[in-house]
Amino acid sequence: MVCGGFACSKNALCALNVVYMTDLINASWWVMGNNTRHELERSFDCCGLFNLTTQYQDDASCNALCKNRSSTCQMCGEIFLKHSDEALKILGGVGLFFSFTEILGVWLAMRFRNQKDPRANPSAFL
Figure 1 (cartoon, one colour):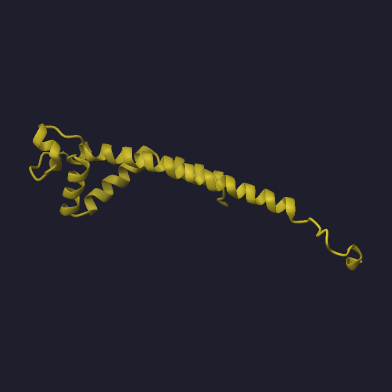
Figure 2 (cartoon, helix red, strand yellow):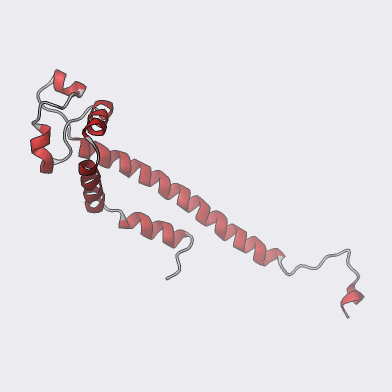
């Protein structure tokens, strides 16, 4: 199957649904080290990932600012899903922009491809 233009952008972005993004974030969370997790928790002001990781959320090693303000913090997975949704919307807009410029380029090529040079000698081709 050939992937080009608008159809490719639309299909690629529709394939990245919430379930897939949740699985991807969950898998990457367990691959990264503890220092990276703590840095993400500090920068996004959250603790834990999803309800699947409650043993990590209840752990006292979370040093986000929300832990000092209240006993409950927002889950990092929810914040990551919001950020990835925003990024995919921007990516979809960029994909549509390039798709329409590609269509414009094809139309211009078809329009001006077979034009004759007005300065050329018409009898030179006979």
